[in-house]
Image (tube, rainbow, N blue to C red):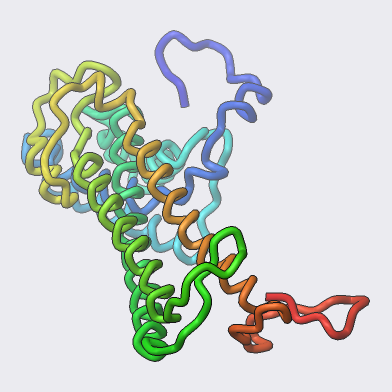
Length: 283
């Protein structure tokens, strides 16, 4: 896959160490979407003919469908999702496929893919959190007047309603959703066009690419755009905080299921047993 000064094949040990397609394959829908937007910009700039663009788009769609159907063979010798798709595209449609890489590096390509992936995951997490909130609101309404002990240090402190307890988690999840939306503001910027480090001498319409991919704008500094992953770290922290809140809810339910508390009962469908103790019903 390398050209230019290389005269030897890459060591198999280096390939094994450096490959990432075993896990970054999941970026494929975003990689393909980014490639189509990039190819369209190439066509608009006169680098591709309409026929060449059509071949590239059709070829990428075919590859996408094969991946979705589990029929695509990923090769670790091609390192990552980007080169696996590009190499297969070129194999299928010929030299036109190789034109796709003009004015683009894997550096700005992966930065674009990961931003698109994070954006999709944020949407899915917010949707899941909203569904959980609705379920908690339903329970809160049903048990709005049901009194129960409120605990501190697992000692009874003050009387509360079960509804009030459930609503506490609604509030936590609302803050989690707000933090996720805040993350989205910073990551939803398009780095495509930044190249490997300092852009490209080929001038493509970055604003048009960003608009096609649903970004709010374009990055302003190419070195920052391709080298920083703070948006991923920020999202991971936000997700971990959301996970801590869900863990609190889970621990409450586990505690309430015990014989000592016996506040709630879970169905057999959501419990497990013991291979030795037949009386066990584990949440």
